[in-house]
Amino acid sequence: MIENNRIEYKRKLTDELEKEVIAFLNSDGGVIYIGRDEKDAFDIGNLDDLQLKIKDRLKNNISPSMLGLFDIVIERFNDTNIIKIIVASGSEKPYYIKKRGMSSKGCYIRIGSASEPMDDRLIEEMFARRVRHTIRKIKAPRQDLSFNQLKIYYESKDLLLNEKFTQNLEFLTDDGSYNFVAYLMADNNNVSIKVAKYKGLDRIDLIENNEYGFDSILKATKSVLDKLGVENTTFAKITHKERIEKTLWDKVAIREAVINAIVHNDWTTEVSPKFEIFDDRLEITSAGTLPFGMSKDEFFSGVSNPKNRELMRIFRDLEMVEQLGSGMPRILNTYGKESFIFMQNFTRIVFAKSGQIGGQIGGQIGGQIGTTMDITDRQKEILNLIKQNNKISRKMISEILDINQSATLKHLNSLKQKGILIRMGGTRGYWEIKI
Image (cartoon, rainbow, N blue to C red; front, side, top):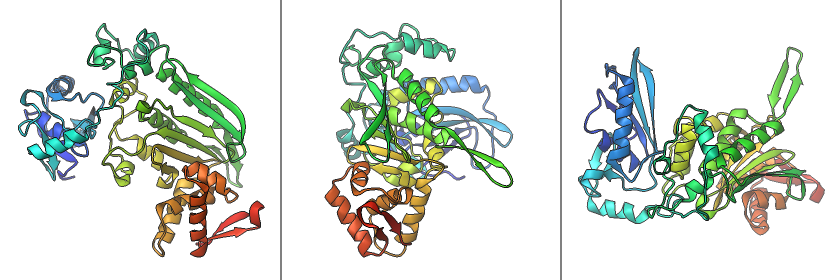
């Protein structure tokens, strides 16, 4: 690999570290390798001491805080241990070197394989777009908070929260009050997450409604994972050669999707993620859509831009998430991009049941018809839903995609006119895709 806009090599730790990290924070994120260049590895001494030095410098020398926006891991290259620093794109741009301030001497951006100073105009533009309404700055609805559950979770990982943990975990607003991060992690709150189960393919017949929460969101997350684990039953397929066992949904992908929905949920709206089980699918819906400036291609490639870096930091401390940017590839390893639906204010993932891989099928649909005729992304989403369930109703399509039924009818009619879609058997019939 050669150096580029996402990769930087350093033979040893230098005084330029903060500059390189800030450039990645102010751009699309990236990776810094310490102890190697494009071909060779170099001895960098005591790796434990070096990791501590790097953490300390990144924590104390860069502003705004980048806690939760970086990972430090040890990798093996050419039979030598090296350090890999994974840096996410920050949401509070522009980042800068504290002692130099928010100026062209302290702010940098990645251009190709170089980290270049930012001019005043770009600094002002980034500052104007900065996300100010974050959960770290929102005052908690109540201030009589305790954190016994959080301490237990940390102790289970042999980590100790000292008397300054509220500052270290960024639980306080500028005036010293508990913020919404603290509220989500507290023993008692009014935040709950629902797991609903329906009979059939729509939201008419609710047969089970479980509500987890009113305590630490960590406990609620584990409860949701446990519930979906119970629902994710194993079924067997007998062939003439062997017995093949499968679960309804891929375990790794579901775990990643659940944690992503909770960690990256837009909690500033005070709307919790929801999890809905139907006869043919699992839907996971979270508040918020793509981060400002991020394209779908960047999202699917695993570019990391944590919406709530404070939550990400805690989940990583407790080993509930792994390296930054690793979740999306795990989901896409089984389910295709068509499983994701981006709405104006929400993001939804639809996982087909019974071993079907709806996203991959949808991707095949999009690829086949996209090369021969004009079709919109919304129409591809509709075809993906029909491929998963050829008896799906117009109303149900509208609900899943969060669009009105007249818009759905318009898209369906367009697909019919193009000869892609045929309705068989009237109102109680089914759809056929002709590709």
